[in-house]
Amino acid sequence: MSKKKTNLQENNSKNKNDKKKKGWNITIYLTLRLLVIISMLNQGYNGNWNNVFLCILTLILFTLPSLVSKRFHIELPTGLEISTYLFIFASEILGEIQNFYGIFNYWDTMLHTLNGFLCGAIGFSLVDILNNNENLHIHLTPVFVAMTSICFSMTIGIFWEFIEYAADTYLGKDMQKDRIVQKIQSVKINPEGKNEVVSIEDINKTIIYYHQMEDTIIIEEGYLEIGLIDTMKDLFVNFIGAFVFSLIGYFYIKNREGYHFAEKFIPRLKR
Image (cartoon, rainbow, N blue to C red; front, side):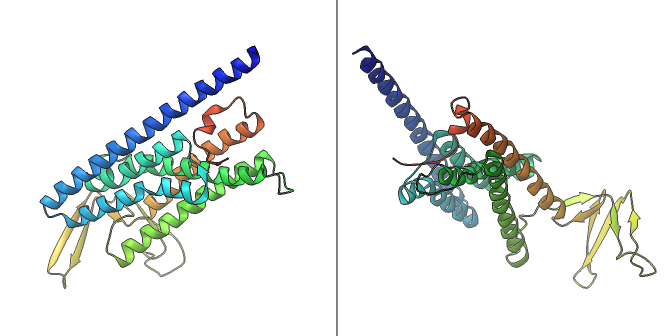
């Protein structure tokens, strides 16, 4: 009887914790939705219709976790679900509308690192679910699962950079944030036309002539580098985020009882 009583107490305690976690999810979800709606009304009042569209897009993105969970019968852990909501809000509302990308130099870096971490968790779960499926006669090593987690995350990161490039090239956006740099290394500026690199350092000023040289823009302290550094930085920090979770996932497979932190970010099939 005492053993049954102990199991009953453990189940009751687990149910209470699950309800508490679900309550946190709902509270954060509703709070963020309310903030987005307030922002949308404010942007509409000021006639910023592009920002209104971003707010609508954000509200749509907020519904994706629950849709994915219901459609594929996946249980999303608290950490992953809350992090996803905060990531969407931080990138669209704070980053784009409130210009946190321009105000805080690290904002874009932080979000790409977090994206690498979260996508690493999703990639890890996909392989781990297959690894534990009794109907499949495969057993992948922890190292292979961790490597697949990194590859999945990096693939998502690369596709996002494709989207940024396409938006900048064909829609006239600036998702690949430009940077002012003071050094050029290129064979294009070789005065003899040879395939030899010419390096120019300590560039102080760049003058851009446009409209048949009638108008000019002066860029102080260097020249405008159009997106390459930003793209490579994004991919690098995406890799860091993915690598961190792959390590967590590796030790989680080795000792599932000792790494409960990983369970907060690893989706599971509903039973």
